[in-house]
Image (tube, rainbow, N blue to C red; front, side, top):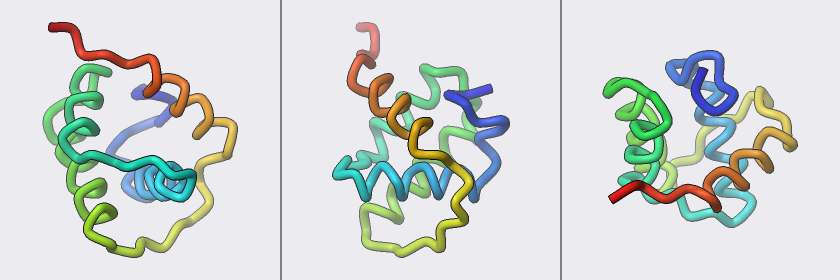
Amino acid sequence: MLNGLISSRDTPTVIDAFCQLKARGHELDPVAVYEFALHSGADGDEALLMHEIATKLRAGHNYRRRGRVEADRVRHWEQQAAEFRIPT
């Protein structure tokens, strides 16, 4: 499990989570999303999926959300992201 997702291949869940983060004022840097995903245990394909969604959101793509992710989960991710530092 990656950050509360049953599978990061669950594209609608990733989309919903990223849309909520964007709506809460977070800039989704596709490279940072990719690095975070890999560091958190995602495989390459899963990290690429997240990178692609973040890239499209950053470019202004409007995804249709499906309400799969609750607000408390998004707050948890916000806290994790604030504490995240890639080891050097």
